[in-house]
Length: 133
Image 1 (cartoon, rainbow, N blue to C red):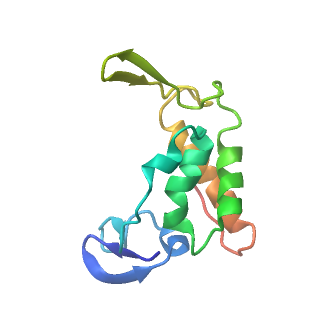
Image 2: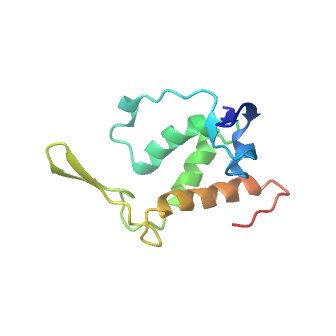
Image 3: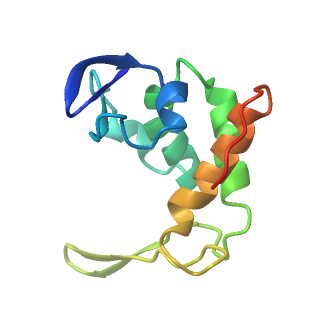
């Protein structure tokens, strides 16, 4: 999958290219050139980690194979304090509660940043690049 910028649709960047940048150099946000189709029926009864792998893989598949991505995701959520990672509770008809405080710092940001940390570890292990977060 290739990515463009919201301020420059002629860009054609790979996932690894944009991973190190965050925002595009022109100040825009990166978006995929084409949005993948996800079959939601295949996600029923999967674990948090399995759903994350299925959702994220189309966006990273040119640079990270599915098995490696699955391992990155598994490592990302090892220190979460609930086996379901992000449990959902049915409160009432069509009312659900998603709890996002089971990470190491008890903040919702853990869900993205734990993953990002392990993603950087994976892509940097065979690279001469260095990053500071």
